[in-house]
Length: 283
Ligand SMILES: NC(=O)c1ccc[n+]([C@@H]2O[C@H](COP(=O)([O-])OP(=O)(O)OC[C@H]3O[C@@H](n4cnc5c(N)ncnc54)[C@H](OP(=O)(O)O)[C@@H]3O)[C@@H](O)[C@H]2O)c1
Image (cartoon, rainbow, N blue to C red; front, side, top):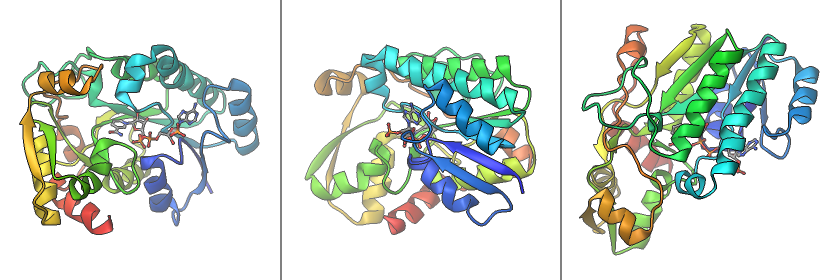
């Protein structure tokens, strides 16, 4: 039986992945940071030596984009150096390494969806630190898969998209931006796709998101409609939003990821609106 280590196992995607992989043909070792801290090389070595993983799914990261902007040292230590540490031991134990990266490695100026071979140009510390992580993996490992995704939402997630149903229920009115556009991705769908890509033994870089794209305003509108709420949604540009709410990190304005490569493998992701309905039911 192949053995899989998951880092960042208590995070949003990690929890869904554990459920999706639970009854698979693989033996799953999912660790939160209390047990497997990716900044602690000795700790990683000890765990890898004991388990000798065939596959490592490296999800651990500092994902709060604005916190990263204010704390670049911490962000680079976890997202870049932490990924270097994992790459070194994945290489040493001859494990296949899977890493989840982000649309935030792009500047958003292309005007059409980003393909896997487009040139990155991150605008913020989070994007820079995740891109460095990608580069460490390419430098150390031969057997790797970098999955680029965006705006993950799901049950008990700490991020804005996951908390939005609650915010819509509690507030009379909220402000949402109209000019930050990318692909929402339901954590369950992403986890299922990760399972398929491991089964296919696909290596390299690939984009995985729900199909379609939208602004935060459109996302909120759809959510409000499904929840049948009357919360007032107010439109703001991202520039106005950053000033009013003191948001330090820049975001790419248009960063949908192209699903052409994924579709060519006969893997289709459903539309984000369909997944949003499933999430709201689950919520
Ligand atoms: N969320 C998105 O929209 C999005 C988009 C594109 C790519 N991604 C990538 O997808 C992956 C999963 O994201 P997610 O949404 O599941 O994020 P998440 O919920 O924030 O999960 C990340 C997990 O990593 C843990 N972690 C932080 N520092 C660590 C350390 N030093 N050692 C080990 N674990 C540590 C966090 O623990 P604590 O919470 O206790 O610190 C958290 O449980 C990440 O690599 C992220 O960069 C996410």
